[in-house]
Structure formats: C-alpha cells, structure tokens
Length: 564
Image 1 (spheres, rainbow, N blue to C red):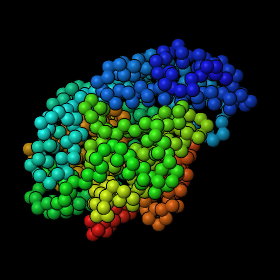
Image 2: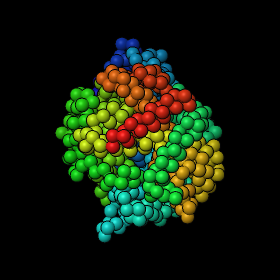
Image 3: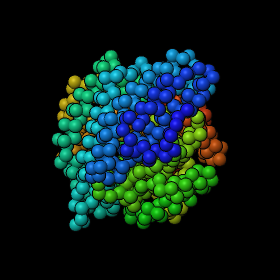
Image 4: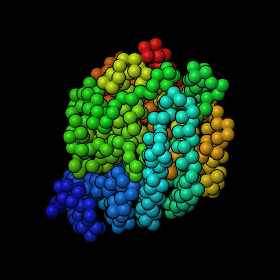
C-alpha cells in the first residue's frame, strides 16, 4: 500500500512532517472495508511503528548525553513539528476504524481502548501534551547536570550511592548529605518547574471536560480495569500488612548496627559488617554474567539477551552528563529493545539489569503480534515482566557471587522489595492528594507538607532529626511524580504479581517460567485481570494476598540469613 516506505527508522530521524504526511493521506483515502481491512491495518501498523521508533531513538539520544544540544534540538523539533500532526492524523484513523464498524481479529481490547481514547481526545490538547514532554525534558536536564566533588574529582550523583553501603558511618553520612544537598541546591528550580507542570496539566484536564488531571490521566493510561479507590484500598492493605513487617526489619537493622536510632545513611549498609557486594568490574563483565543467568532461566531468553549484546542495544555505565535512572525502550520497526541505566559497580546494578531485561524480553515477545496497538502493554503487566525476572533469576546469582554472597544479595533484594511497598504507597498516595487538591498542590511548599505527613504514616523507624527539610523535599527526586504521573502504583501491583510468580516458581520453576512467557506473548490483547490469570496469578489489592507475599518474603529472608 505504501511506496518507498523506509525499512529502517534511522532513515527518518531527520524527516519533517511533510515526509510523514503522505502515508497518513494514503490511509485516510484508502477504502476501508472487510475486504481491505487486513491490508489497511498492516499499513497503519508499519506507520505507527515507524513514528514510535523515530521518537524513541531521538529521546534515547537526549538521555545518553544531556549536554548534546543537537540531540535536544532534534527531539524538541519532533515534538513541535511532527508529534502534534501525527496525533491529529492518528485520531482521524482511529475514528475511521471505529466508524467502519469493523473489528480486526484479536482486537477487542484495542477497540475498547480506542473508544476511550476517542472520548478523551481534544485537538487543543495536542500542543499542550507536546509542552508537557518538553517540561519532562527540562526535569531531565536539571537532574542530569547534577554533579559533586567526591574524593577529589567531579562525579555524577549516582556515583555516591555505593558509598551508602560502606561500613564507615561518617563517610556514609557525608555521602548522604552531599547527595541530598545537591538536590536542595536546585530545589527552587525544580519547584518552579513543578508549578508549571501543575498549571499545564490543569489546562489539559479542563480542555477534556474533566474535573481533575487524575481523571484525565486515568483514561489516558487506559486504566479501565481498576479505579483510584482500588489504589487507596491497596494503600490501606500496605499500611495494615507491610508497614509492621518493614518496621520490624528496620528495628532489627538498628539493633544489629548497635545504634540508638537509625539515620537515613544507615539504611543501605550491609549488616554482616562485610564490605559491600561488588559483583563486577566492567560493563562487559556485567553483561556476560547476566547473560549466563538468563540462559539458565530460559535458553531462548538467553539468546535474546545475546542479540542485545551483539547489536549494541545496551548503554549501562554511569557518566557525567547522562540522564538519571534506567529504562528499557523499544524500536518496534526494527524489532529491537534498548536498555539504558547508570551502573556504578554495586549489586543494585545487577537487579536493575535483570529488571530492565524483563521489559526487553516482553518487547521481543510482542513484536510478533500483527498490529501496533497490541504492543501497547499496560504498565501493570509490563512491570510483572520485569519484577518477575528479578525473582526468577535470583537462584542463579552465583554467577556473580559465592554462595554466601548470593544469599546476602537475595536478602538485600527481598528486603528492598518489601520496603518498596510502603514507599510506593507514599508516592502514589501523594499523587492522589496532589490532583485531588490541585490548587493547593501547585504550591510546592505545600507539597512538602503533604509528603512529610505520608512519609511518617508509611515509613516509620528512620530518624530525620535536623533533616526535616530534606525529608519533606524527597518528592523532588522521584522522577515519576514529575514526568509520568500515577506511574508508580504499577510497580506495587506488579511486585505483588511477581511475588505470586515467584511462589509458583518455588513449586515448579519451569512451569512458572512457561506461564510467565505465555502471558508476555499476549501483549495487550487481553484485559489486565486476564493477563495476570494467564501468568498463573491474580491482580490484587487486598491484605490477604499481600499478607501471603509478605510472609513468603520474611520467611525466605530468615532462611537466607542462615546461609549468609
């Protein structure tokens, strides 16, 4: 149907809108009937994959080097000149498909989603959504430029994180104060950016005729299988079941360290008194050992990771000017995922790579689906893919460590997993408060107060005496709050799903892995509860399911501590 369509998205990185438009015109002008549906859908699929990949390749370039002005300019140009037009044109095609009364095979969930998107869409929001992405890029630029002097040289902030695992308490405290202090230096800039985010999002919601941005975002994220009230029920379950277990872990930590109170720089140091785990020396070593693990989990997954290594689809090491955090994105026209992270030589890097590789394996699993919307996986199941991989890989951590070290690493991971739920509840409850109280929340100082109240409710046992301002401003460092609102409960729900995959794997590792992969291959062709069921688990918000997962984590920690 298309003539001269690029086989490689990199050929279109410098295109302007006029080079994309003829493909949209061809689709809009083409007859859409039962006889032509498959041809029309496949052409639309290729065009959507091309646009997605161009956007992601331009974005990746901005994160690899936040000081690359050419990359920033190209990415901004995409959002200024191509994104708005493509949104309008794609909406016309969605409406065309809806009006036809036709439904491609396996497309029932996508038709439901298209109806929700059509109800939400407004022409006047297209440039505002582009502006929101620019503000997100501004956040990356502020944080990515943060560097400090440590041990006589300038280093990016993530390089301080391994110091928090060291036995020297004074050095840990200095590292923590240096890290948080650097954020506090830019707090005013981040708070100003926050107010601009809030004002822009209020306009977006108002344009859509919705009472708040939360309603807009819920529909934008196609959260059609659970509600904000379900999230609040999850928060309550965490407070009931997990917070007491987390308090017990912190009290055990305080006692083992022989401290009067546990300070924020005491939460990462290893309780054995041994040096921090240092699993690798170079990124190549990290890759090779991770590959060995994936081959043990599943030979095909191992082969997929080998492809990523061979095709230069990994950028792992931290460096000055690199954007913060880690992610896996994908290039769907090429059929390739890409992993970005900031590895600094600590065990957390291993966990991050296992996690992001789970996303990559999900991408490989869905590329075979015929239509682009079927690839648009909801975050709740996407994070099951990544968090389950961390747990499925855990029995093979001896690729990096001795048996005793592997036990230490697993304890650290399981403790982090359990302690994450209360922190997730703070982040998610904070976001609900923000958009339920938008006029108050545009004042970032009022956000400090709300965050502080939630922190005290969900994260007891850490002494912040004299550090009240740093504690209250912690939300400025959580990029999800700024860049991808409401994308955080997904992690908590997925972690509960992953714990269920793990429980199944304890009984039958091969069977659990097989069900896991079968669920991934369904992409977005089933509802969220159905996808969880395909993986042998359930989407849950209740204290009973959470309690079983918490008990499994706590009992496993006890067993592993006997080994380590």
